Image 1 (cartoon, rainbow, N blue to C red):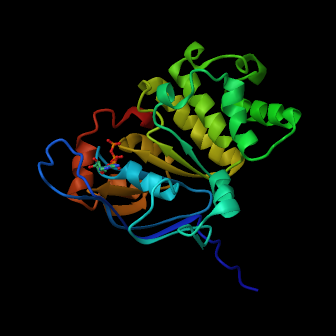
Image 2: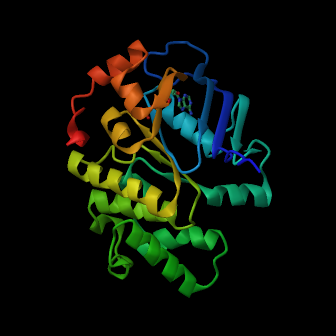
Length: 273
Ligand SMILES: Nc1ncnc2c1ncn2[C@@H]1O[C@H](COP(=O)(O)OP(=O)(O)OP(=O)(O)O)[C@@H](O)[C@H]1O
């Protein structure tokens, strides 16, 4: 029997998202803003896919639409072959387990009043893992995998007792504790310095290898995208201007916008060492 090709993790077809009010600084009286304007993409199982663009290009909006934190106005998003638009109840809860977010800012995303154990174990409670021993074990595994080891030493800590890099590792452990299949990392190192950022990129690359997770890496940093991603798509004003294998897009950019983005990157050689 011939092999049937694996189903993509995510298929996006012609999606649009318009906000009724343009909140950008110089919008004047403009009534609406189309943040995502007819985007189509396919993310394969097990790949790291980069969404690259400058500030305001629509990256976070696209991530929020994929997480179903906001609804699209047109088009379709399919996750593992199923249209996510009608998900409700148990099916939506199951989707929320399978798809996770690594947020941008580890200084804001972690609840300052929750210990690292409670932070990482909370999703397990939400998703019905009743045994406290099982929660301990899974939280420890997630923290170890995120490089906070030995995990038990970090259980009683609070976010303010950790460095920025350690906080982001805790946020990654929280995102990974339910063994999601698809993870969106939205500018996960924007608050960290270059050296720490690089260790986080390495961690994400490891998690893909060891846990087989599919990653959407949202960034303005082409060097980071080249280091981490198999393929990238470049987004500008809510539209994909080009996409392809990372090396190809970066070495042979096909659009003026990508060329300008490459030119504007002062740290462009940093991860190539
Ligand atoms: N809730 C909202 N209401 C109105 N406009 C919005 C809303 N969210 C985003 N926008 C607008 O949509 C556009 C795309 O924003 P988005 O945050 O997706 O861009 P981005 O590429 O992630 O930028 P950054 O890197 O600065 O986060 C921007 O012009 C932004 O002002």
